[in-house]
Amino acid sequence: MDNSLDDIETLLNLSTPELVLYANRIRRDYVGSRLELCSILNARSGMCTEDCKFCAQSSYYSTDIPVYPLLKKEKILKAAEDAGKIGAERFSIVTSGRRLNPGELSYLADTISLIREKIHIKVCASLGSLNRQELKILKSAGLSRYHHNIETSARYYNRVVTTHSFQERINTVNSAKEAGLEVCSGGIIGMGETWQDRIDMACVLKDLEVDSIPINILVPIKGTPLESVRPISCRDIIRTICMFRIILKDKTIKMAAGRERTFRDFQGLGFMAGANGMIIGGYLTIKGRSVEADHQLVREIKELWREGLSV
Image (cartoon, rainbow, N blue to C red; front, top):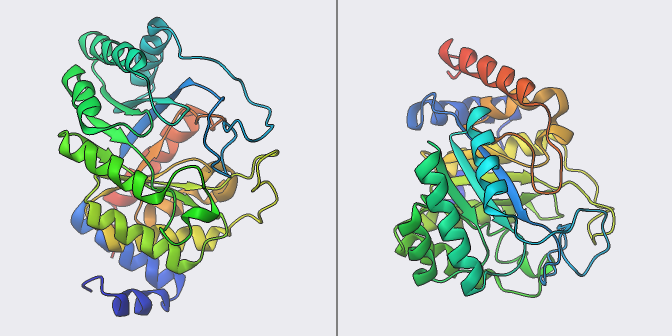
C-alpha cells in the first residue's frame, strides 16, 4: 500500500477484523512496543473568544465548567510533578483563548524553565496561535513539543469553527516546526464529519509531518451547539484509528478525550487497531478514569504486544 486514494478506498472496504490486523501489523513494524503516556493541565479555563462548537470553554456558550485565570507557577509546577509520579512521559500546559499576550508568554516561558530545572519530565504546551519567534522563546525555555490540533478536514472546518480559519491552524503547526519544536496535532471525530473528512485530516497531518496525533472522540457537552450529536459507534472509532495508523505509519497515535465514555470495556481494542499512546489523569474539562485502571490497561496491552497478537 502506498497511501494513494485508491489504496485507501480498498482498505475501507475491508472488514473490521481484517483492517485491525493490517493496522496492527503496521504498528508493530513501524513503532514496535513504544507506548507514550502524557498528562495535561488546564492552566487557564474558560473565557475563550473562539466559537469552536465542541468546546465547553468558549465564551459563546453557557456551560457548567470552572472558569479561572492563568494558574500560579507553583500550581503548574506541582501538576508537572504529579504527572511524573503517575508515569507520564510528557506534561502539557494548556490555556484557553486564541493566543498569549507578551506578558503571559514570558510568564509561561519562566514556568517551563522551572519545570525543566526541577522535574525530569518532557514539557509540551498548547497555547493557541503563536508565531515562530514566540515559539522559539518557549523552545529556548525548554519546551520540547507544541500541541495545536487541526480538528478536522479543511472541507468541514467552517462547520465547526468560524472565528479563525483552517489555514491559521496550519500556519501555527508550520511555525512550531520552523522553531525547531516537535508537533502534536490531531483532531476530533464524531462531530458529523464524513469518512472522507477523516481521511483528509490524516493525509494533511501526514503532509505536515507532525510527530504525535491525538484522536479525540466527541463528548457532547450540554450548552454547546454539538450537545445533541449522536455518539459515534465503537466500530467507527476503531476503523478510524486503523486508517490513521495505516496512513501515518511511524507516528505516535494517541487515544485522547472521549475514549472512556465511548469505548467503555473495549479500550484495549484501540491499541490493537494501531494506537500507541494515551492521555492519563483526565482532560481539560472532562474527568478521565483512574490512573490505576489506565496503568493496568498499559500492562495488558504490552503483554498482548509481546505475545505477538499483531500478525
